Amino acid sequence: MTTKIGLSKDLKVIKDEEIKHLLEPGELGAILEWTVFDPKTGKVTEHRVMKSKSYVQQFLQLLYMKMAVLIPAITISIRDTSNALKNVSCAVYEFDVLAGATSVLYGIIIGTGTSAPLINNYKIETIIPHATMNYGAVTFGLPTADETTSQFTVTRNFSNVSGFSVTVNEIALYCRALNSTTYFMIIRDVTGGIVVPNGQTLTVNYRPQAVV
Amino acid sequence: MIKTILKIARFSKDGKLLEQREQESRSWLLQFIQLFYLQSWGAGSGGSLANVRDILNTLRTVKFGNSFVGGADFFLMAESTPGNTSIYLANYAWSNNPTGGFPQRGEDIGIVVGTDGGGVTPTSYKMGNKVNHGEGAGTLLYGGCELYGLTFGGSNGEFTIRRYFTNVAGGSIAVVEAGIYTMAVEVSTGYIFCIARDVFAAVTVHNGEILSVTYTPQITV
Image 1 (cartoon, each protein chain N blue to C red):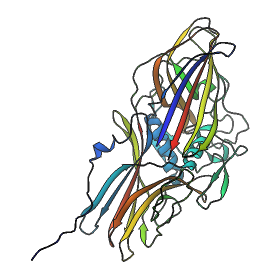
Image 2: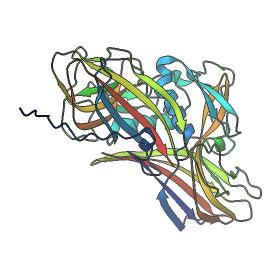
Image 3: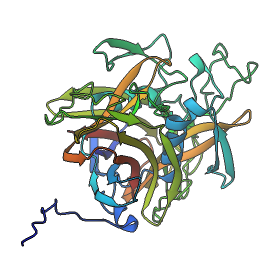
């Protein structure tokens, strides 16, 4: 009797210390890392690390607003995730991504869209809702630095409770700005397909980094 | 991914371009990442972040929520007034210090230049040897630091941060470093933090000449 073993994707686990060298000197960006694992056994079935490629228009607009300290009388028009143009100035909420569990309004967001990112994308293409993949609370790792790189980590877990496998093709970072109920997409990345079997958990890390 | 272009240009007193350099900025520092972290995390948590090193080499606990206009914080601010003009106006709605705000000299916010070409690490916390605003020997007149040119075309976007420096000191100054200073608040006092620093081959600014330094952050999708 022959036993066939399905060939899985070519998995490459990158050690933490190697993550620091994905960006070129002088680059300011983010590393996108994800892990799929079975919470019952702890077994990791996929782990990948890549440069986050796609800071979109809203990120640069918000950074400009922040560095220019735009006051309410001098706003900038930025498209929010509902496709509405909002007049934005400095406020309490500017790059806030600290979303609680179940929220699909901000923090790390996942979807099934496969279209290549464009600079004017303002939302994820096709969001995967909570209760298909349960959205955990966003957590943070404190800023650190070594001899070349400074970074911090934004993390969110997604548990597949759908009863089926779910393929995550896109990952985005949404933030609150202007006020507590206005949201903007600042990063959108296409993953090439992350298969999350029913019952398994996807952990996504965005690591904003600066390399000298 | 964000790349930042650093341009250094030298002009005669009548505005003729004498020299121009362009290079990729290498050096967004730990303080930038820390203040960006606080902005990303702090609004929801109302928390503070310890161990942010200011330009005096003192570790500060920077608190989110020391607000001014609309409740915003100062983190990452680069726009600034000229020279030693106070950067803040009295009619701003200070929430924690309504009588005086957090006044800082214009020369301590935004683009700064210096004369020490020592290397940069992520934990560099100040200019090696900042050239101060002034008219005396070894100083330059700092103009305002302005942000402009937020534009998008094709798959690219950028904006520019620019400052002019005028030499009226009577002698020449060899500028070899540029950076960006910003402000954040510990308790109710504002402190200055260095968020970017770059070194380059010397640009000698003679008496009467004008130096222009621009940082242009760019994104490409």
